[in-house]
Amino acid sequence: MATMNFSVPDDVKESFNQTFANQNKSAIVSRLLQEAVVQARRKAQSDAAFMRILARRQQAPHVSSEEILQVRDDIRAESDSAHDSPAR
Image (cartoon, rainbow, N blue to C red; front, side, top):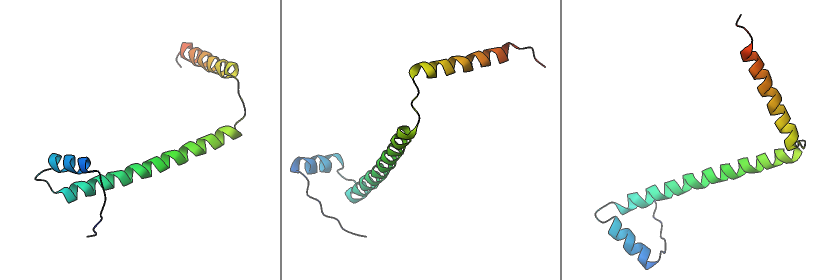
């Protein structure tokens, strides 16, 4: 098992020692480090996904709000007419 040394403010050390008295502090720190790694990886994936979305949006054709609302209304009208038709 590896050893890591960190400098932390005295108040953080005291709070940590009080909060986790009589517990395996190495195990707690290991778990916190693992959670930090997972969180950093998720953030990197999220950031990459966001950048892909932005790139796609820049290549997408511009559509006005009016056009979007008109298409929505057309789809709703088609859906309503399909539900109003007699069953086969």
